[in-house]
Length: 116
Image (cartoon, rainbow, N blue to C red):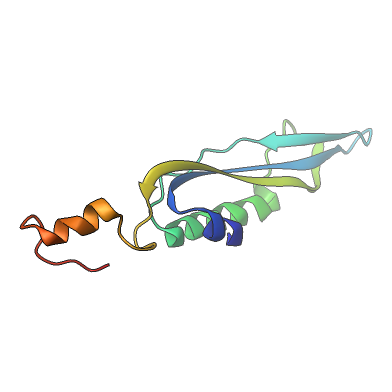
């Protein structure tokens, strides 16, 4: 989440993709299973994204919920976790100063109060 806070300044969409290893309990073969869960809604605030990401991580770490093709496969370990960020052009709420075009509205009758 620290990298997202550091590099993202527009609204965005998250994908939480992860993989884990499953071992066959009969012959010991190991396969890597990739999950492709639903993505998030569009976020305008970093706090909302952080809550969503924490929920996704809690689900990933719950070994009881691991998808398996049959009961012959047992969870072995987590393999890889990726968080993909899809950016939009709309600025996040409460980040940085207002753009010039919006700040200039304060000098006309179109805007009564302005908080930069």
